[in-house]
Length: 152
Image (spheres, one colour):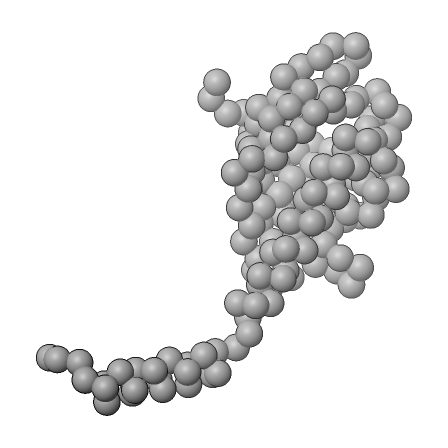
């Protein structure tokens, strides 16, 4: 079938109609994903700084924080060692991040590389991370996090 101007005009009109009928969910999801990305960045900065207020601001009160070795912590157990500087991150690089927003929830996956220090011992960090974020009136809050070991 050959395309003529009439076919092109009809195709263009159909595309414009669909664009106007499509809800703005793609735009909303894009801005939500940007908000989640900003929250992940704020979490990373607060962890590096050991900033208690910053950590409290981006974490949910019912936080479940899973380490790659299997230890599970609540919000206070996660924040205290960072804020008290008994466990610090010397560096953190977030790589290969994906964000999937599902309503008021978001699933974030990334690789975390860097160095941590605990009890005077420096440890390399190369782990996979799965985070679940919850949208609340005052922004995105980290509800759950699970780390897992990655092949060397």
